[in-house]
Amino acid sequence: MKLQTQIDLAHTFRRMHDRKQVLLLPNCWDAGSARLFVQHGFAAIATTSAGVAWSLGYADGEQAPLAEVLAAIARITRVAGVPVTADIETGYGHAPADVAHTVQAVIAAGAVGINIEDGMAGHGPLREVADASARVRAARAAADASGVPIVINARVDHWMQPGHADPATRLADAIERAKAYLAAGADCIYPIGLGDPATLAALVRALDAPINVAAGAGMPGLAELARLGIARVSTATRLATLAFAAVDRAVVAMLASGRFDGLTADFTYADAQRLFESA
Image (cartoon, rainbow, N blue to C red; front, side, top):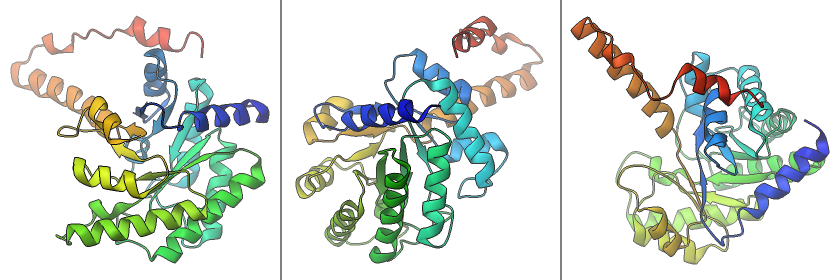
């Protein structure tokens, strides 16, 4: 991808976060799913770290080698033609300098946005605020040096932690973290796992920044999320696991019945071929 093209895509993606309407982002896991989402008219797409890892033969949690993840991102950006934001988990490394290196490589692969978590790798406990902020700051500095104004979506993983922390204390700390990440250069805050409308509304009131939530059963719909002030919704692993579920059901039925009726699909070989005719 030409640098100017990537810069233009980054500016386009940044404008989608103006909070005038909710940005709905499907999370792809390979070039095929990326093309399918683009065909359905999504103006931008995201990657799912878990889906990408599974497609490469690894578990989620930075188990997939970074080089293989970068190659997957490059394949996705090559065929997408729209802004792509990449889930880099905790940034692949112990130090902020490692995060900077990862961000440089992700930008080189064609992405114009990143998700970065504030927990330890492998969905571990939360980092200290200063440590997590330093990693966001390193990501922003790497992006600035590249000339590509990526959108940094900083995850606040309080609602992914085990246990039953006091809700008010959890929210107060999440707000403190979010403000620190925004000051360090983040553009958007992602309280993954949070679906309670009242808490979401409180977070929106406390932060002058776009808020991203994860779609899923039981979450408020787009209209309600818009009313709450949510700026961005992503599907996380949901679409990848739906694809696994469809194949799982078909295989179970085939083994149980000895018949192949379940192998009929509305989406055909020809449909898949057409996805790539203009890629």
